[in-house]
Length: 326
Image (cartoon, rainbow, N blue to C red; front, side, top):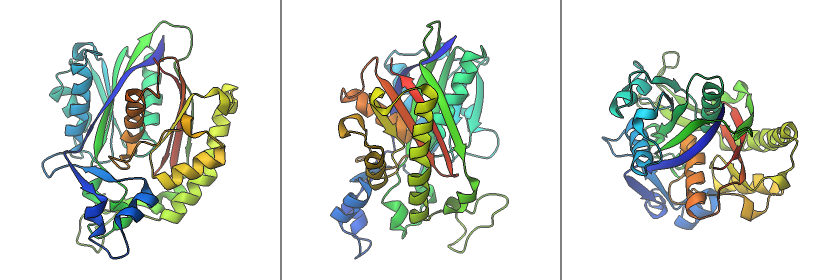
């Protein structure tokens, strides 16, 4: 058996914050400056009564509504999040019940962020190609806005809330539709992009006790520019391909500044490189599937294309894969 992607969809947070709204919070930021530094004009934000699992479930329902997958067929659910509804039980179990999936459906949760979608694809591919599952629902969702300090525009200008759903099914076709993969980790950079407070080891910080995101932007940029081009080249060598063999490249939508530097360093033409965060922001593990769906709707991503997906960030972690688009 081989695993193949059937369809992708997503759900954004119900509200949005525009650059003009954020610009009123600081004399050092203007609407245009925020756009130039981030590539974001507005970011989706979950309402007070909206949680990551809600966004994930809505994304899954979009797939059901499109008739591309039937809930009774799903025999495994993989949920990627770093903002779970609670510590126990795993939110994946709650989602299984909420979506009305069969009781023989397995459900696991992966604590991973910016590279989580590609890691999730790796886990799902293993489940399918080892015969453990035939119809898998891969959900990613985060409400990062819960972790952002109101006065920290470094992160508030970037991040948004969203959920995504990807249907992966078994097929008897001979050619590989998902893979090969390449993964990596450098935990020495963990403190440069993290949420402080809220865990059992870390005590709440001095800002009032709520878990807060901290980002050392220059260090994250340095890591990205050092590790990711090497990883892209390593995956191409593993697949015995060159960049000219790739029809479309979709990186984690970190920010436009980083993405343009990566594109330039790798010498990728703009028409084969996706930036799709203008109206949603950096949505962590959902950013790649959102970009895939937007590219599909814009006819930039079409059946038969060979796609490279590259997740990178918090951890530090990175995960890359090649896809043959269905």
